[in-house]
Image (cartoon, rainbow, N blue to C red; front, side):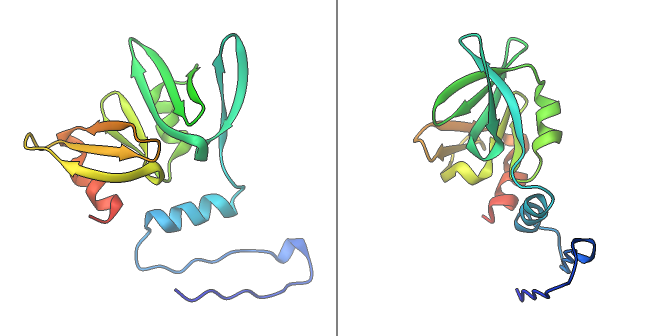
Length: 144
């Protein structure tokens, strides 16, 4: 891909134009970065509220109507529902089962199961299961 940077004289003239045959995850990520960097949201643990960046999230899971956010540093609660986070985070985050959103940037490798599901090993060596209904889209987005 060719990148062209042109110097302008004022902030008002700044703009980014992306010309692409197809809007890929990489392009979506670049757009998110240009529009204001990494998204962040609030989570809680031990009665403390934290603001975490989306890039720190490995996956998000809903269990018994509670939503849990998993990072390298552990597990947090959040007030957001799964569908709200799916829309809010976008980009490299995608649904991989009815109860889980996965950060595709945190996937180390995948292994197909006989049942049609996929085991995804994350960078922290945790394994999550991608349901059959989501396998095709996950493979497409991972370039498999």
